[in-house]
Length: 247
Image (cartoon, rainbow, N blue to C red; front, side, top):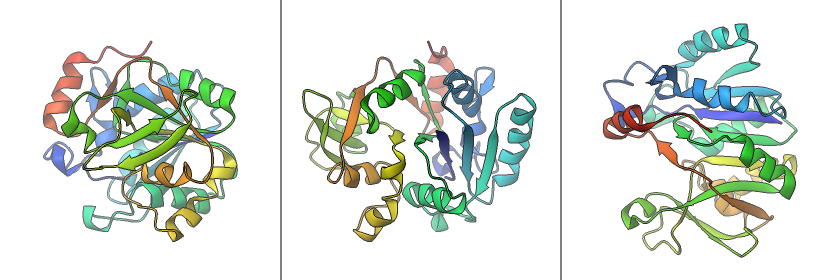
């Protein structure tokens, strides 16, 4: 299994911090966001390689970071998607497609947002996906209606099977919110071009899952802890104050 880390955004809501520096490498406490993620996933023996999908503007910054990680024994690769501005970005779904096609990836994929942190180990999620043997996502209960309207929301049955997923719906069907942590089986990862051809959205990372759950079984694990989404200065300050690491 390979891990794709979505890090090609421009984080304009975090300016000036991210005007010339990528958000996933901002420090939380004593480590970069990506360092927290990789150090956790290092305990998941299934991960063969970490692929950081960057835009062209920040590719060299990520490459410097990756060089240090490789010296520490991490199999890290940086993939430049060729874009140079927020207006020309590919979008998360097309970035995954770009990685799959450029690197000719054929196995299962763990796809992560490079700007989120969890207070529990992602190994719980990969273990869950391995047990299910199908593509999987995570879900948590979100009480705030305003936040739900800006997120991916899922409807699940009693066995965690995803019956429906919508992105940024004006009338969310449930309070189950889906963060950008996905496990795609090798078979399902190959469906991305079909999804795009069928009208799947390409900007929001959950758009592919919204399409996929209508064509293939997808399961949603209830998160055993909290998620920290770093989207603006206020949320970055909050995670600096509150994040204690993963268990």
